[in-house]
Image 1 (tube, rainbow, N blue to C red):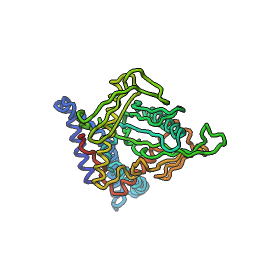
Image 2: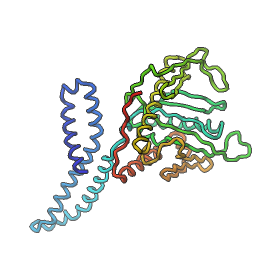
Image 3: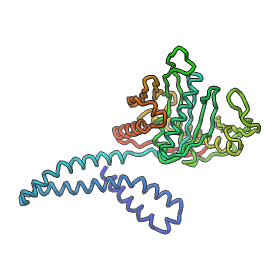
Image 4: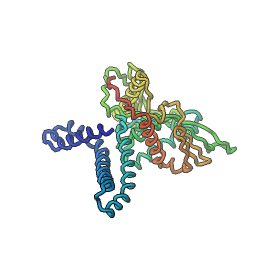
Length: 367
């Protein structure tokens, strides 16, 4: 670990020097890449400098204690400071280990999030709408930007399917563990006997393909336009503004009908299409490598039940890490921080336990 830190220290110094070079500052792409690397190394270097300072102070105090020629009062003072310095050194060592866990190269990517109603009929569609609202409010609290890309409303005000784009700092890092089946237990408004029903919705979190510059041959994409329709078949727009895109080599389809402008619907559909194509490429690559699709927290499989929302007991349970909370109302209002932080921390601890295995690499993006 220490060899890696010394190498990173030299690299950090080199980057810092190059960032003040006029030749670099005038090369926008090179400057952007160096700034990104500088930002990633900064917290590691700050912790390493603190570690080196504490290590130096500890060595100095231990030398005073070990020197028979030193003043007894000075030695006594050094002995009282040594335990705190040893504790600080150990804590900083653990912090550095976590900082050195290889990061998922996609952690800073924006995402496309797909939420679909599962088993449970109209109640599942209403729960999908609740999840959409929960994630939108969480994104707002994080200062992220959200955009509704596509939706298929149900007759009772829920969603059969809703797709949103989320942009911001470390969006994928914080939300990638949300992929899977979310189960809800509650009494539906239409239930006259007060019986608790169980239904589910599926969430898929896809890194936005624009982040890794997927090369999509538009000659392989069929674009169909049609008239938008709402729940029950009612017409939303009176013009053929809805767009459906089909990637012919893979059969992957994406569509958008929420905008009145065909141009805007086309842009949104293309964003979803690229994300789905890239996700398929990632899955195929990881299957070949024999690795898990996601991190140690879970496989990320959309059929994997990851969480239960029990409304009568105000209880949320994340089955992967054994986390149980009794403040479901606040969570549904977007107060997801405790859950997200626990999943990220668990993922880091598992990676560290597994010897800090190098995370999945982004595949070459050609489609």
